[in-house]
Amino acid sequence: MPNAVIVGTQWGDEGKAKVIDYLTERSDVIIRFQGGANAGHTVIVDGKKFVFHLVPSGIMSPGKACIVGNGVVFDCEQFLREVDELRENGISVDSRLFVSDLAHLVLPYHKAQDNAAESNMGQGKIGTTGRGIGPTYSDKASRIGIRVGDMSDWDLFTQKFKANFTQKKNLIETVYKTSFDLDQNSILDTYKGIRERMLPFINDTAHFIFDATRKGMRLLFEGAQGTFLDIDHGTYPFVTSSNTLSGYACPGCGIGPTSIHHVIGIVKTYTTRVGNGPFPTELSDSVGEKLRQDGGEFGATTGRPRRCGWFDSVMVRKSAQLNGLTRLALTKLDVLNNLDELKICTHYEIDGKKIDQFPSTYQKLERAVPIYESMEGWKCSISGCKNLGDLPSKARAYIQKIQELCYNIPVLIVSIGPDRNETFEVEPL
Ligand code: GDP
Ligand code: IMO
Ligand code: MG
Image (cartoon, rainbow, N blue to C red; front, top):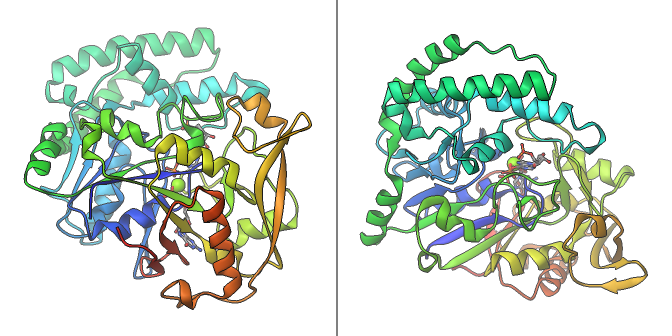
């Protein structure tokens, strides 16, 4: 398979990990390029479920190389928990799982800062995952961050850590007026042990990827979050702190754009969002609740109930533009099995005008009233379907409508259940 980037086209949790696990068979190196342990990526193979926050979702396939790129903000404690779980399940990660020396470390004070900042925001809360993501990217941009590679030199790490610790303590106690109960020495003690465990994973991964490309190996880039959580093009300020778009795969792991051949947009066949911010097609009625229950729409990272709503083609069209999508992968079609009626948002009405373009500010988006087209539900199980032809005609019509509304981008994959084998391909790459 050509090199491909996988991105979420909505607000995250589209089923990216499932598709990455599925496509790993045809790739050699799987690379996470942004975000951190705010991501919750679920892979289910033969009924066994893993939720990854940092380890790339390709790890379930033996022998494939998995890289955490420099664009990721990296929480060693979470990473090592995932490594332990994999090893306990007999999945070897040795000599095939690597972490960029240039990735920035999420340290305990970042999580404290994240939570203190949120509790100071009152009504304007973002609803972050509390995983220290924003503060770590802020430190990176402020050039006071500590990188994974800094752990190789313990004295340098200690010196940087102490300087930052004092600054964060002042900020949290004085500005946020929140108690700061972290102990510098005990964190350093813990990190001494963590450092020993981390050293074998630390690598110049940009070079590793370059070498892999020269050997003809195929690259699969794993995005986290979703298009509308992108810090520039998302529903700012209700976004995450990284660029989630496909283009960021380049600086996020150290390759040029010519190494990307395809961009696959993961499209949930309805819409969900965790955290605060506008959501035009949100359903606060029993249909929304049904989607949440039937789709198991509870955050893989925080367990929060996800907000649910109808499929919004205005969003996915914008996502196609921003990411340069070349294929769509449609997920969770089975969740719609039992609905009498399905609605698809084709346009918005904003200030009395019908528009088909996603507005660039969240204030405008808050005033958007969705315009729907209604379709009949298929009202039966689709489990066991192996191709488009096996689906009931009403399910095929629903897929076709989505595709038509999204610039007729070819559908690569349809996912009809959470397990790896509940997947079929429409137009292979
Ligand atoms: P990601 O963050 O985009 O990787 O997605 P998450 O793992 O956070 O959330 C997707 C959820 O839907 C997980 O619980 C998956 O196991 C599940 N899932 C993925 N694809 C399908 C599907 O086609 N049907 C159903 N019913 N569940 C799915
Ligand atoms: P995956 O990769 C869904 C949301 C949070 C919050 C906002 C900012 O599993 O799709 P942050 O902790 O990043 O500062 O929170 O972003 N968010 C996600 N929502 N899926 C995710 O990741 C998310 N990662 C962050 O809920 O609204
Ligand atoms: Mg998720």
